[in-house]
Amino acid sequence: QVQLVESGGGSVQAGGSLSLSCVGSGYNINNYCMGWFRQAPGKEREGVASVYIGGGRTYYADSVKGRFTVSADRDKKTLYLRSDSLKPEDTAMYYCAIRFLSYCSLKEEDFAYWGQGTQVTVSS
Image (tube, rainbow, N blue to C red; front, side, top):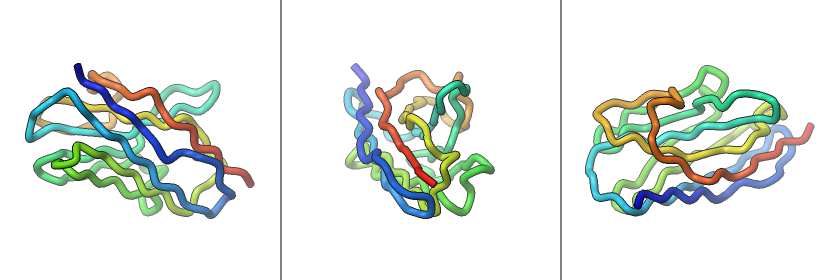
């Protein structure tokens, strides 16, 4: 079955950087979408960034544009998120998700499979 495993979360001071990874398994498809979502305590889960594997097109939430960079290695089935200039409001559980259809989005309902999440905490 499809599995996604995130890693790389942690605690950092405001202005710092973190890199997250998500390794997928249980599928063998060339073109699909992988994305990062986050959920802060008391808030709904929101899309952060996604990338279409096979075409390379990326999508970002306005709140992270210019600070976060999403990328992927199709051969390794790995999704990455480089987060720079982190702010306390970036504190959340970060989830990786995958969508086996022909376009990408940042909508939670568009993604079928999810990882367990990795915590990112940014202190002021």
